Amino acid sequence: MKISFDEKTKNALLSKLEKSDKDAFRLMIKGFG
Image (cartoon, rainbow, N blue to C red; front, side, top):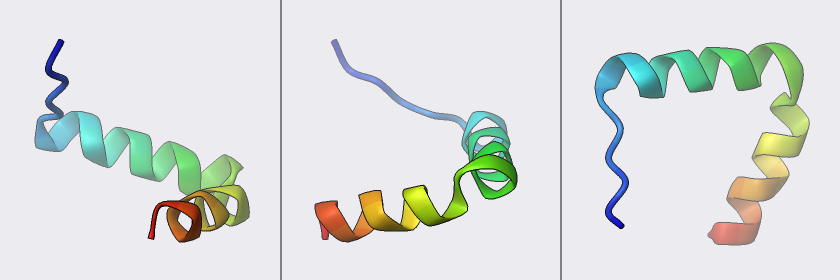
């Protein structure tokens, strides 16, 4: 199954993450990078 995000969904997720788990999100990004 292919998952695609439109801009609204992506922005909503990002703002949600920034409010709640910004540090955890950064660690997750580092893990992928």
